[in-house]
Amino acid sequence: MSEQIRIEQINKHFGAQHVLKNISCSVNKGEFISILGPSGCGKTTLLRGILGLETLDSGKVFHNGEEITHVAPDKRGFSIVFQDYALFPHMTLYENVSYGLKLKKVPKNEIRERVMNALKLLRLENAKDKLPNQLSGGMQQRAAIARSLVQGCDVMLLDEPFSALDAMVKVDLSEELKELQRQFEITMVMVTHDQEEAFSLSDRIILMRQGEIVAMETPEKLYSMRDNPFIKTFIIDQIDKRARYIWNLKRSQIQ
Image (cartoon, rainbow, N blue to C red; front, side, top):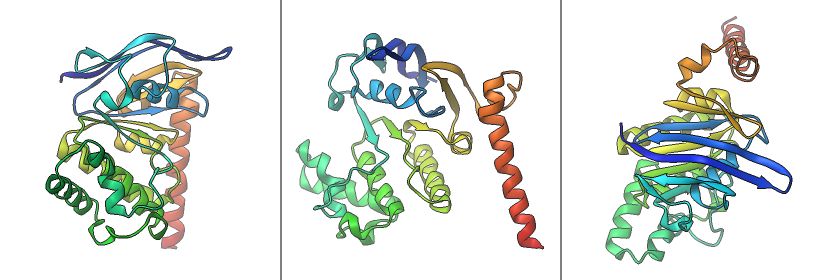
């Protein structure tokens, strides 16, 4: 696999707080990477540093072998899906998804083709004339993903994209996202605090704690690292607890 994103010795402070501590890692083309960790570990700051929304104190960011540390966010070749959808309330679904293409002065015919193709993929074509407040939470997040997808970028960054959704919608949408990632061979980097979400979607997981990377491994490898107290408590015990809950729930339904 060819390396698509590389991060070298990133540091970031907020006042006296050292939020990112000499972070180095890489992401290969076509991978689905989750940045997982408890609240306050620095995972969102890392994502924002990759995107260029946070100015780094030191370190370098590379995209396809080219340094982009000081390149403006809109020139980095990344698209972003935010946690809060970030849809314009006065625009229709179609207008929201097409907005970025209009700013780039893409021809109208091409805009329509790209937007309608994305809406069909995400089962939103029948809602194209609706305003965001007329859409469910799941539909709004699909719209945010469609808006990112139409940009044609080779890397999609996602900041806790499913955290505001209920459990069943979250499962359905995460499966759709993984299928889109495979179909278009897009590299995806997702921030999450949900262990099950990270394990079900990711090729590899960047596990963070207190501004540092604890491990960057496949889900299977992480699950086997029982000798690490943090990994056992934060990942293994939580996944096992969730599995027991689901098993007991199914058993009660059968009875």
